[in-house]
Image: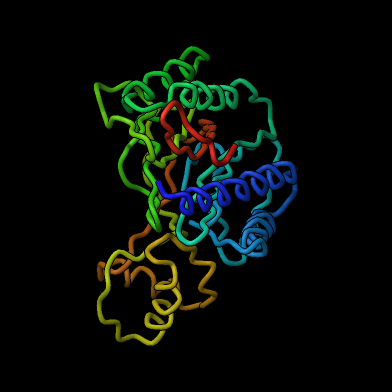
Length: 291
């Protein structure tokens, strides 16, 4: 990895780490979802960076892909387990990091995903397989009495690319990608009191562009003018600030131009915790850019 690229990864990671830590400390019962999300996303931009994806705020059994909707009136409540997943990018180089805030009495659940992440990081070096990392994550979560979410994984990162090889599982598998010096990727253990698998809800607030095709409808053309600035990275329906988006976005999905990301959730009544860091493999270990 070239030094200038490494510097951008590290700068993005430092900013993401600082903002995530600050925002987690600001969550309290009665605070608005929308206020939190707007505040965090504004801080990223005010510091000269941009969002790699909309701030994910996922509650309780919801594990990923939720964010505030336009005019969102939800408030944080006593007992909530809140996942904050923040992506910051500088010139396309991404820092992806997450933490969990507990407004109830779920310290051990949070400890499970946190310690799984720390144990996985200690293992990272050239020659280690993704399967070995998954085994460590699974061990740390199950020994605390919870299940890892088997169908959510960590992922490789590249310029303006949020998900690529290597895939880093949260369960033991045979083999998998072999880590090499210079790889950039995120490890993100999820611990759950539920089934250990997530399914899709109907709620979709996050989209990304996956193809370029002619668009005739004026509202769709206006949306795509804004979307193309994302270089394929995910965006929020809220960012488009257009009342017609409820009709326009599904149409663009049906046309194969956009991809929608449904909220991913374990069984109703379960609780999920998540922790995540971005790493770059070095010749004898790794740099944790979001530490």
